[in-house]
Image (cartoon, rainbow, N blue to C red; front, side, top):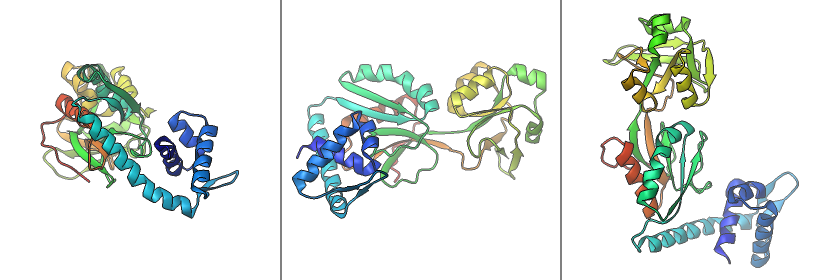
Length: 307
């Protein structure tokens, strides 16, 4: 059996359809269908029950996949180990990050990273969706917030602090709010995401009771970079992470309206993590990316695995 055909089969099993597997593999759906049919013919049994509406795995297919998955994973690790033995970082590295963090911090690092590892091919996927690392063939990703997936290893990258910011011109025109509750009568710019759009939660840095401020946002946006641009244009006050607006604060383009407060939303992400699939062998290309990113933008912390 051809290992590429077996990998195709596993994609169909994970994604639940020939068309979804074909899109990920960038081939024609008929090619995927033929591959599966040829494997079924070779095995002498049906791996899927097909209908016009759905594709269902058979009992034989489930048993085959249960044994096949670990074998293919082990084979990939053997290949990585053999390639790494030559002492070169090479091959294809598939990375995932959010649109905002990826554009702000990962993309600017790519030129230096590629110069350091000229034999490496980089496939960067920028998306705000939570991708399945195994099903989507992601080697390493940057994620924010709490992590609940026990199938990945997570290393801390950055702690996140959110700040309510606006331009100095907006502050002069509208007046600097003296307390968080005044934001209810001010123009606010928010993420168009649950929690971020309805209210901001304030707590003094030294502790104490929390203050919940309900908002009537003037502008709702799904992208952090676009939200920052609107704040820089003086359209209102925005809640943004320090890793996005740190340079703006230092240059005076934006000001922190409530420096004595910690600000957030319900279930707001408070940290950034580098994550990769939990495997017995970590390829050199993944280790190289982790080392490079943590060296360039990470906080000086010892590596701590989190499952």
